[in-house]
Length: 225
Image (cartoon, rainbow, N blue to C red; front, side, top):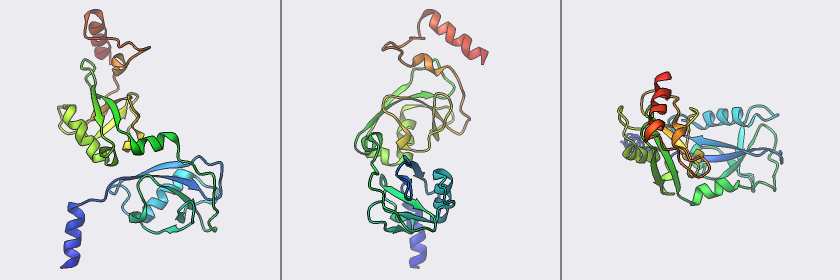
């Protein structure tokens, strides 16, 4: 009975998405790699180790162990990993402490500040982007971010499932968002590469495509794609 209840509770309260920075064991010059741990994609600690192996590309080969950077405590489960923290990836060798690990300024800023983004509707260059202020507590959950964008950007296909950069690069988590940057929201449909940049400020001015020749020019660009 308790096992069944545990599974039900797990489904109703899914594990939150976490983002961590991982360094190479003993490598003081390695800048660190950021990993977004989405329970839907990384379901076990072994799968996390495999992901880190491909990300850090360490000379020792496959990542077998993950440690805390100061004390060298071994991490043995996804639940133990803390959002926003730093870790050290190692192979079969012993842990080697690195004294110079520093959290990048952008990462520190992400953990403590809200973020304002500008989001286009996929496939529609005649509509200006929606400006969305995302509170810092919302940024801790990628699904909450997408839900907030869904409320502001009305897609024909329904809910927003993904955000892309203007060149079509998909985002995998909140930490990839940059303040005052521009993105494209998509649903179940594919990303459409269009001249969204016409709404992006250039040298402090916005090229208004809603008036006169600008609007016709944009229509010509759309029809040519």
